[in-house]
Image 1 (cartoon, rainbow, N blue to C red):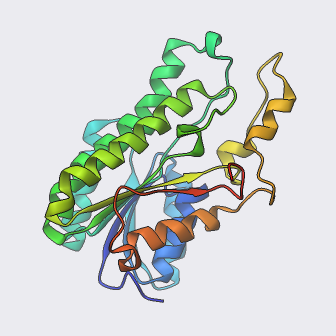
Image 2: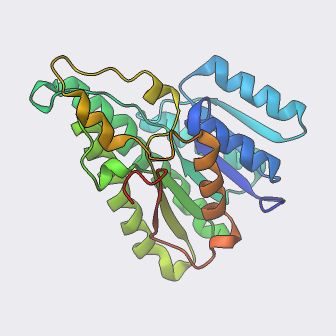
Length: 249
């Protein structure tokens, strides 16, 4: 399929996990990509690999929690490619803490990257997406709608992403812009592979976020992102699609 031929995608969190899988999927379908991530070395390695395969891929280090970084990156994308058709906001961080032990600095950092970073990306991209009648795909989580143990800050940030995405979908529906969310759970990404139980935690609670089918792959989420970002989802906006292997079936 070449669903993204002649389309430009701005993608955050591109250097690893779901972001990297999404970059690879969209490049394979013909997209021109501007990739952003705080991890400089793996980001540049990905850009080089995609370029070697014939994809139009560029990008640079971007901390999505920094307003100026995001604004500059979106501006650079449009300056390079002349347009913007799709925003995929994937960048995220995760911490596990007993709620009463969450430090204010950690709470603020999780929300700054996950929620405020998604806000910065959407706000910067929207004027360009309105010109192309483009669309947004944000990555939330099943933690937004179901209890996830030891993830109070993460769940709050992902719930905010879901609500914000649906608000954007409502605000701009008549202007031809779509905005949708994916809600992954139990996906074998670096942030979940680094999981450690907080001291004194009940390990039985881990079952709440374990898929009956076994852990999914980042490519499983990337496939759904690609569908939502493509014309195959032309009549979908404000949707929240779980990619969780039946965790919450």
